[in-house]
Length: 54
Image (tube, rainbow, N blue to C red; front, side, top):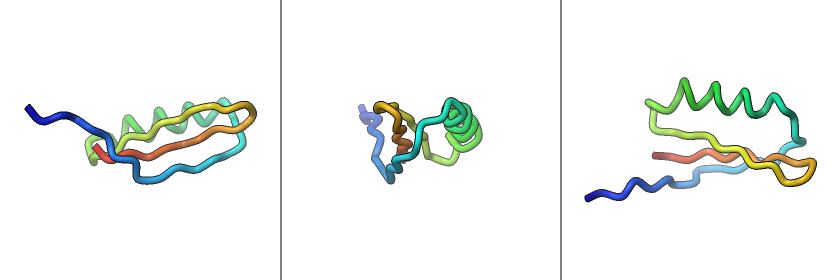
């Protein structure tokens, strides 16, 4: 059985904004079928946006 593993393509640290979650959700809904998934994590006042290849 093939294991689904995400490969990290890129990360970017940005100033945190609530709207970043909306952007990541929008990108995932529209680009998942192209083999990429976006993630976001919050660290204090900063956010890290990650791009993964499926």
